[in-house]
Length: 169
Image (cartoon, rainbow, N blue to C red; front, side, top):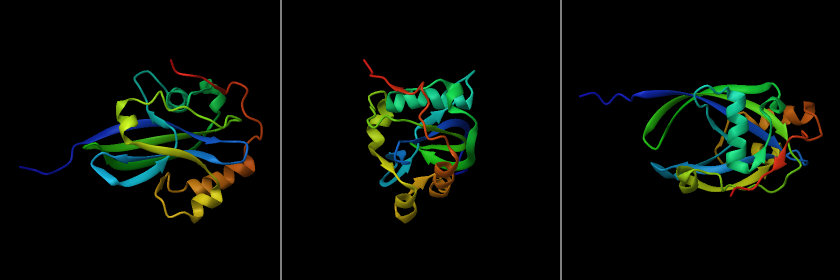
């Protein structure tokens, strides 16, 4: 009998959400199979059938933060990576598409998390590029501190008008 993993291919849309202080929102979570090894990550998730990565990023941003944005307001993709990891026993090859967005919102709501996200979510925080670079925590993408520094230097300073806070029922 073989112990070879069966890999699932997945495409994800993710948002590098910057606030007025040039800080990026990251969630802290863990794999249920490795609860003692948490990591930090951007809002986002898997692309559903007939959905683009940009549309998935906008949908996931709403589900995970309560912020609504039109997919086109996410602008051009600012980064992509390909990662391999396991989560809850599923081995994944994931192609991440990252979009940057500014917001003036300071509070978010995670009430849109699904059951698995609720179980594996430890918290969230806004990080500066310097804090990320100096930190010993695990975060993804691994190049985020450098990427954030470039985005702060080149992105618009005003939040997109279509970004607004929404409450979940």
